[in-house]
Image (cartoon, rainbow, N blue to C red):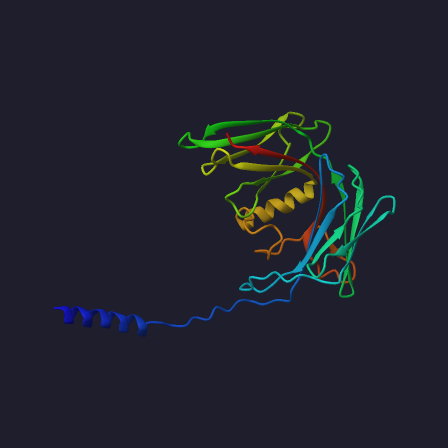
Length: 272
């Protein structure tokens, strides 16, 4: 009986082995595109003089390493023609500035020169309200999920657009979302986090960014196609989404990424 079982198992193994087939998946390869992550963020209560811009290129699907771009010439110019130079930190592809001067509603122009081509974009620095209070309660289907509500007063004299960002200790990447005041202009507004995995003593870092309508729409598309940006908005994109940066040298070779400037309100909250 034991020998029969051995032969039966051997027969199954030979059958499975004989059915193996190598399948080659033909993935389209394209020329790498420049990716410019130029998010200038001025946190309330800080000078805002230290800023950075990251420049990479897209890579093949199975490449786990994001190629960085070295040797680019990067600068931002304000409306008074003051130039802020961003110098590369070693060979990291991260370009840093230590004397940036943020001015609310100020207009700034980004210039990136790489491989003989010039990329430019213009945006203004959008203000953001202060967080007025933080509320914690229980919610969700079971009634045991922790709910955090970050309240703020919207500016009723203009249309406003916001980016919300949550950093929680058990998630490798921030949770991102965008919203606007189309139906709540001038009212008390809030950003809401409900998560069954939240536990007492855990720290939640919440950031509220003031953004433009165009950036709101850009991020809304990215969030929709990437399932919550689990790998970050400027990792290898799951689809081609054009930002506001144009190639002045050769328009068809447009970069990916976005140039935006935001005032940011940051609050850390320890779950009770």
